[in-house]
Length: 413
Image (cartoon, rainbow, N blue to C red; front, side, top):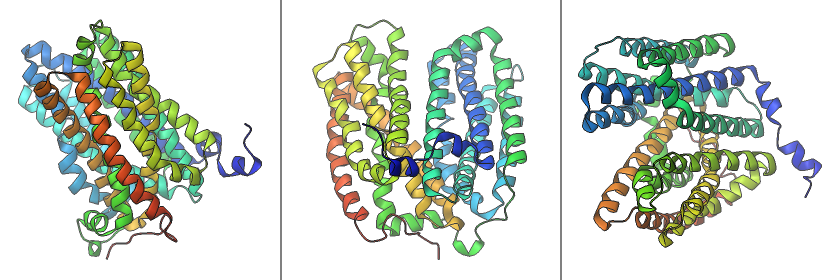
């Protein structure tokens, strides 16, 4: 069915979004950083295991890329409201470049390496908060802003797929030190791009807003609470990611299937984000957020029948495609709060997503060990997700139909 002229007008084309100079710079800088980070994660995993032959040390260093999200996201994200955002972005990126460059020095002690990884990840919180807030400032048109977030989501997941597909081969080919130096260079390039393309603006917030204004606003606002609840459902749909290896083993699939299982969800996400952004208006996507959240979990219930590998990949791709609703959730949160607390609230949003995913993966491992079935655990997570998503979807439908609920703005103070 052909889209109507009205739909065409309400769904901006990607080229119109990319024509926005500030967004173009933010988008390119983020893509560079993600590409470098994928290399760095693989390089660090190889480096630590080569030097220690210890799965524990490998796990500790990998955990250092997640744990700081809790501390940095809740605390340091406030800097995106207290300082000029372009200045904060450039400064954080350059400091991260220096820290990653130090990691590349041969013989860096493992405790020092862990501290460096922790600090780099910690600085990601204010960087992301400033980037999200600036991206919203760059657009006057709500539809263009929503489309820009689709492009960001597609780019991020595509970079993840490329990292899964070729990161190990590239690091093996060029060496760990060079991979880390390339990551450091991507931070420098990202800082240069932002300095050249993003307009300087004074700090949006003030000390009167309160250091933890984002937490206070979210906790007291039913509209934001429902949106956060919808986002936190990813803690259940992420469970298969942490169980990819045991799922493959339970299916008697070859080792290469682990990579396929890990790639299926982000591939589905890219497809889903592309389809929704091209064929669904902003209003339609707001209506579909609840049902898509339910479908994203429901697809995982299919693991109850211990599906063969091809069917498992299809189910994961379906879950990922439906899970693209999270882009609309994030954009709606970002548009629903005042500019002076936008960094704080979005920092809390990103932190909640990341921490919930970490908890979901950890609990998935515990349950799989307890019941002795990885596929059964995924199915259980899907069933729980359907129940939780159905409840949140009902709450969202009520919130969305209230006059002015979606477009109203939450302020500090």
